[in-house]
Length: 91
Figure 1 (cartoon, rainbow, N blue to C red):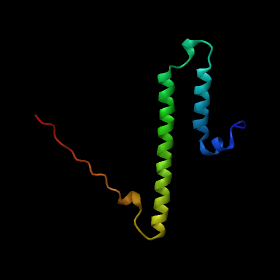
Figure 2 (tube, rainbow, N blue to C red):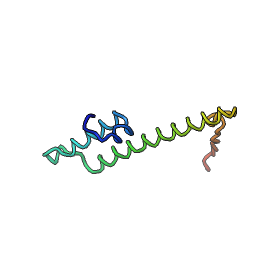
Figure 3 (tube, helix red, strand yellow):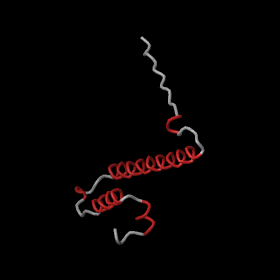
Figure 4 (cartoon, rainbow, N blue to C red):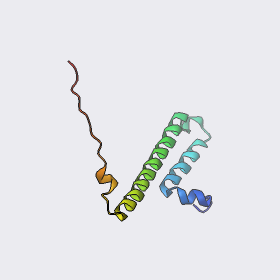
């Protein structure tokens, strides 16, 4: 963690940074059979990207909730409704 750029250390979680480091190290293995496939690397990186997006959405919702509650309104997470339409399969 000491050698990381300050922005990277600040923006990323330690767990995500360690995962990326481990992935990078596995890509550097001398034996091609022991290196991950590009598909595996892409899947790992996409998983990290998705987890980061979820974290950002949660943080944005919290900021909105804080702003709304300061105005005395109901929180946005309590007021959001996601109706699910269940359709029976045609026979």
